Structure formats: C-alpha cells, structure tokens
Image 1 (cartoon, rainbow, N blue to C red):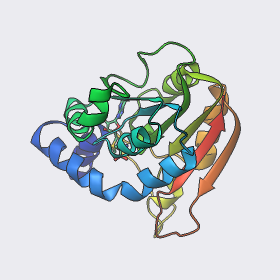
Image 2 (image 1 turned 45 degrees about the vertical axis):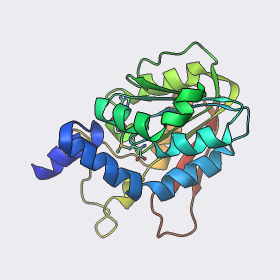
Image 3 (image 1 turned 90 degrees about the horizontal axis):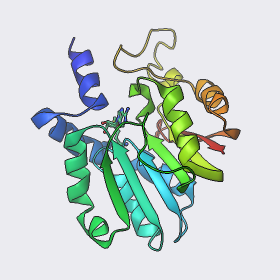
Image 4 (image 1 turned 180 degrees about the vertical axis):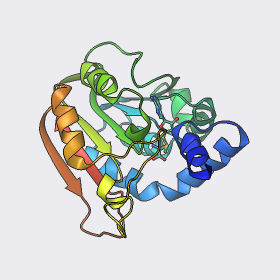
Amino acid sequence: MFQRYMDSQYRRPTGLVGQWIGRKMLQQHQPENRWTVNLLDIQPTDRVLEIGFGPGFAIQQVAKLAFQGFVAGVDFSKAMVSAASKLNADAIDTGRLEIHHGDAERLPFADSTFNKAFSIHSIYFWTNPAAALREMWRVLEPDGTVVLTILPKERWNEADPDAPVGTPECKPYTGAELSVMLTQAGFTSTAIKSDANREYRSNYSVVARK
Ligand SMILES: C[S@@+](CC[C@H](N)C(=O)[O-])C[C@H]1O[C@@H](n2cnc3c(N)ncnc32)[C@H](O)[C@@H]1O
C-alpha cells in the first residue's frame, strides 16, 4: 500500500509530498544525472530533449554545456514543472531552455527538432512506452542519439533476483528489454553502457541512434 503510494509520487509528484520527493530526487539522482549528461557528450550547439526531467538537475547541466544550442524538457507533473522552472530560471530567461508540461506520448515538437534526447528513471512509469519511444524517434534528426538511463530490473532486488519487482504504477525493465523496445521504435545501434563501479547501480543506460 505504502509502496504503491510512493511509486505513484515518483511517477507523478503532486502537492507537498511531491515537492518533498522532488527535493529528495535532486540530491539522490545526481550521480546518474551526471553519468547521463557525460554519455551524451554535449556540444555547444546541440539541440537536446529530456523527458521526465523531475526537479531539473540534468537539464541545468545540459543547458550550461549547450550554450549556443537549445534544450527542452517535457514532464507531466505540474509540481516538477514548477521546481525545474525555479532551478533553471536563468537559462529559461535567455531562451535557451524551454520547460513543457506534457506527456511523453505526445511531444509538442516538429519532426527532427533535436540531435540528442534522453530520459532518466522515467520510462518505468510511462503508460505506453512504445508510443513514447516512437515520439522520441520522430523528434530526433537522422543519426540523432537517444540515452535511456534506468535502474535495470535485475538490480531492483539483488538479494532475491527472482522476487517480483514493480507495481501497477511502476514497471522496471532489463537493458535487453529496452534495447528491443528501442529497435521496435525504429532505433538502431543499441548498446548498453554501465558504470564499472557497482556502487552506482543506476549508472546504467541504453544508448541508440535514429
Ligand atoms: C522518478 S522521477 C525522475 C526525475 C528525474 N529524471 C531524476 O532523475 O531525478 C520520474 C519523472 O518522470 C515524469 N514522468 C513520468 N511519466 C511521464 C510521462 N508519461 N510523460 C512525461 N513525464 C513523465 C514524472 O513526472 C517525474 O518527474
């Protein structure tokens, strides 16, 4: 019961609890946010999209690196849109960063708008991940890069790998499952990247190209 409530808050933070979860994620998820930004190898003129930005740490880092480019984020939690907008007020003012309230399944961008797209700890919560991945494919330009960072399913309960994990609100995936889903959405060259230091269990990403 409590686990389902917490999953629903991580899925879509709302109200005061959601604001508290946002502050917690801002600290807790910094290693995998930095890991993902590093994998993306952001260049000054890159056009980058993040789905499910939460409190907005990764887009803050990306906007600093893509200082001649354009960064956009989409998240369906109003509480996170508000938190990320505050954290990134300066970059938003310059026009280099756009924060959108919206759903991964319907991205408010034209085809081929971005050359890089990513998402961190969010795909477990998507109702229709196949539709959302097709949307990411659509808004990326040919040869664009996608990076999906997750805590892979086999690491959710390492003490008992056969125990069922997830809830109706939250569906963990293995890297192999995500690779198949990315291929079905039209991506190629899928590869799994993971940190040799197992202390950082969520420094684990599936990378692919359009
Ligand atoms: C667990 S939080 C992770 C936040 C952030 N990426 C981080 O690493 O701290 C998941 C985020 O994904 C967002 N999210 C979940 N499903 C979504 C969807 N279908 N469309 C857009 N955002 C979604 C939630 O609102 C939440 O902010």
